[in-house]
Length: 300
Image (tube, rainbow, N blue to C red; front, side, top):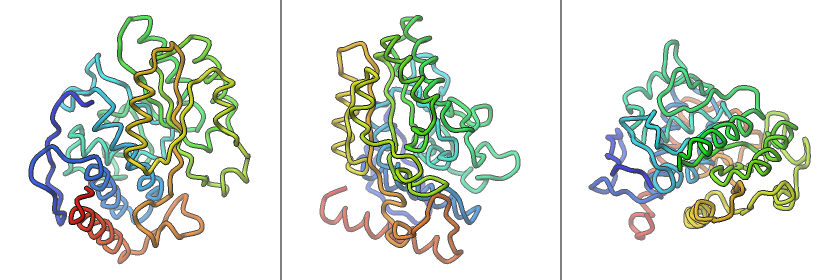
């Protein structure tokens, strides 16, 4: 539930409906497109993750979160913490679409002195709440944020996006235990289960399933959804926020790496993608065609 009506941003080569009240599907499309344009600057990157979580970020920034684009440190804002620092390209794309970062900075992605380094750093980027680095720290920081807000009687929520690979880290489960112990009803964790990490398939590196009973055993309210199904995401986010019980909530999101670009989806190892120069335009064309088809059907 963003506080403002978000302004539409010019996007070279993209066609969009008139007006600022864009659908969540349109927002997700635009987030994917921003991410591809940033990836093209470097020729490589964590593109598959960005495409996979675009629907989740669209629901977060254009349905769930309270924030002010022109006042990113507003005390009443909901905090969105990116535990997985290498997903920064995805969050930058959402921050651009939300009007917190200007679209004109896309060409600076990953460059010296850019406000958009390849790994997220709070000191550089408006709207980036924490610096993501070694995985497994984000949920612990989120617990601190949520506890501080609770003690100040600030009604804001803390959202923490973490990866399935972070579930290999003991610190994540220590934080989960602490959140339940402190009855942090203002904390919503979002787990991106894309089944891929640097060393291979996540469940083959360290099998974290079954996830729902594990989180429930730690005292959390648990839901699990298709992370690329926008209506399902909306329902899960709404239910998490509306829960009256004073306990933390987790939304487990099963996502598809490189969602929306089939030739990238099909790559066997896509944790860090190297994309040929001619493939960037091809990927954007595929997104544009799918979005135009959805508009023609009335689905976007």
